[in-house]
Image 1 (cartoon, rainbow, N blue to C red):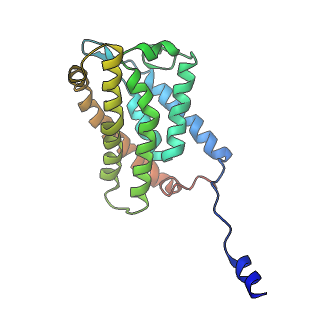
Image 2 (cartoon, helix red, strand yellow):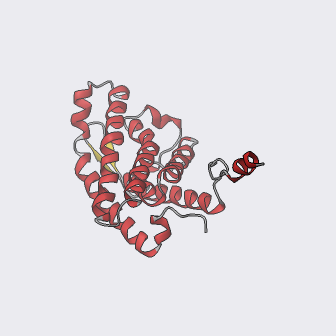
Image 3 (cartoon, rainbow, N blue to C red):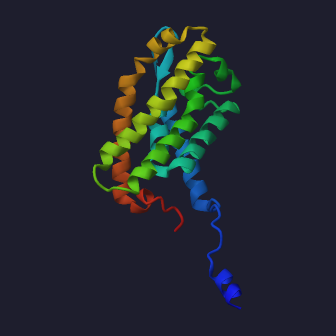
Length: 206
């Protein structure tokens, strides 16, 4: 009798929560946001003409505001729709052909960058309410440094048949813009969290 009572009092194993309709709606809305930002007129840079776009701003916003898996899901949805042929990439391009271009590495890095940005931002938001702008900037720009730029450099090196050192040199002009876009994304995220505190708590379910 005692053994039975003890066993029944133990909590049930935790399971992963299934996505709700609100989760799916947020993923779709932010995927559309990235698409809109990508279609803002791009500025070609460097000998390969890889454009400076607002895509990275959208990727940062997805991770900062939605968190890891929702943010990466939104960016992955955007990338999948574009690769399926819908012209929602920079310069109104789309289709699998973009994977042969010099910007392929950046594009494929975006979902991973959103995932890491969201994971870092969530970890920080759950531990402190101070200096949010600074920490969110660190999450956005740090993830870009760790994933977007290295994979972008690798993609340029492979698709343009360049030495990695030269591809790294071609990547440098994008750093100032990334810093600025990470600052803007952090500022927008702080404003959103003030208006919708549940997003900062990663509470999407009510």
